[in-house]
Image (cartoon, rainbow, N blue to C red; front, side):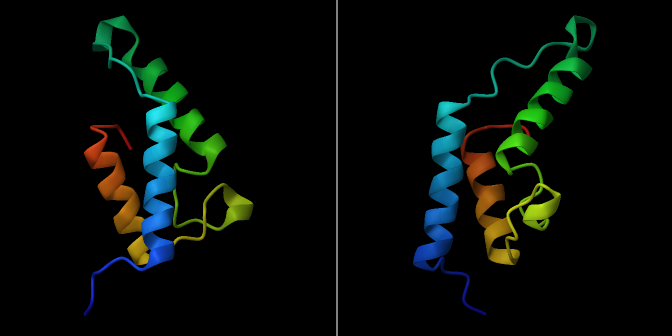
Length: 84
């Protein structure tokens, strides 16, 4: 199995990296300082941009990503030290 990104897969990952740079997650608060509200707000931002569940169909808020797209998204979130 070849796990090398194609040009379109690399572009997909780079699009998410750019979005994460432009939309930083910010400092995660403690439980007592509103962690749940912060997580809900972050997930809402991800959903609005289509990044919450990249493998979902676009009509349900996703990006129709295949397994390699999902892998690329996971890598981008990890490199950005972001919550997914």
